[in-house]
Image 1 (cartoon, one colour):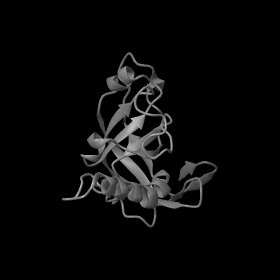
Image 2 (cartoon, helix red, strand yellow):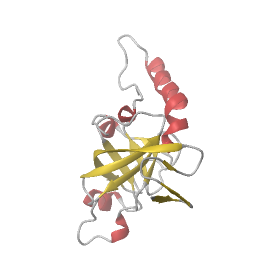
Image 3 (tube, rainbow, N blue to C red):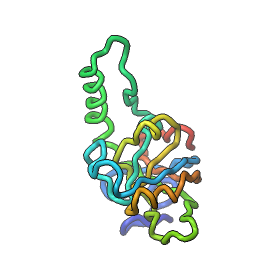
Image 4 (cartoon, helix red, strand yellow):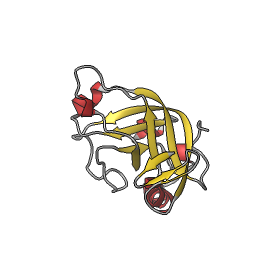
Length: 173
């Protein structure tokens, strides 16, 4: 049984806070870490970048987030397509994604609390480095950019919980 909040559930489907039933999807993800002094405080979706939240690649979750202008498309239309995707699909659903990496390590000499404790809730779309690679996730931390960089890039077997009605992210089972 997994304990989430005040409820115990089985490992094939569990209830996270709120009315959404979720399922586990397992795969290997590469994690990088963002310092508390990097970027803006609200993230690209305006949902916040609290320590222990994550920025994902929307393509991993089947969201066709526009990356390039179509031939002959104006900047305005390109931005409009991005905003439409964010407002209609991503922003209302992103916080339903919970990420639980297994085995992330804090390097010697760094405090154990340099790395937020999983699971992490997705609240943001990653930058082009995250969006350009499959199964890449940024974790927001409460340490400086310099300290976050010391955490490096780490690959880890990861359980991603998504709503039971969704397909698993690409490259997961």
